Image 1 (cartoon, one colour):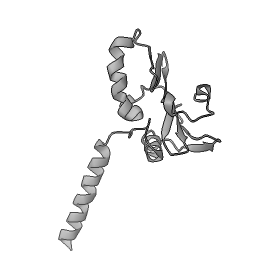
Image 2 (cartoon, rainbow, N blue to C red):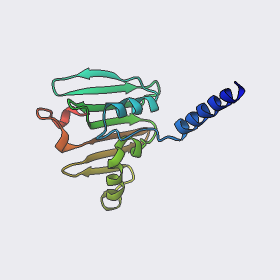
Image 3 (cartoon, rainbow, N blue to C red):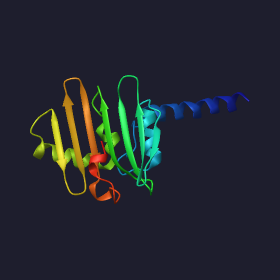
Image 4 (cartoon, rainbow, N blue to C red):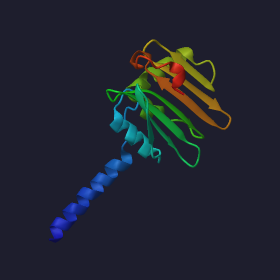
Length: 154
C-alpha cells in the first residue's frame, strides 16, 4: 500500500510540475474552442459566450481590467481576438503559430516602441502600448466569415 501511495503522489507531483511549466496559452489565433477555454483560464477569466449568425464571441474580463475577446467561426476556429490590460500581452500564447510572423515583421515594420501594425493579406496585428496599459487586436482576414465586417471585431 505504501508503495502505491508514493507512486500516486509521484504521478500527481509530475502532473503539477507539468502544469506549472506549461505555456499560458495554446495557439489561440487559428486554434479551436479548447484553446479559447485554456487562454481564458490562464488569465483567470470566465468567458461569457455571445452567439451571432456567423460566429461565437468568447469574452472574459477580470477585476483588474484585463479583457480578452476571441471570435470563433462556425467550424470552431478562432479567426480574431482582442486583448486589453495593464500588462503586456503574452503574444506567443495568444497568437500561437502566428507569433513567428510577428517576430519576423518587427524589425522591418516597427517605427515606434508604442505601436506595432502588421497588415498582411492573411494576418493582421495591431499592438498599442499606452501609458497605462496595452491593447492588441489580431485577425486572419482570409478566415473572417462571409457577412462579417472587420469593424465588428473590436
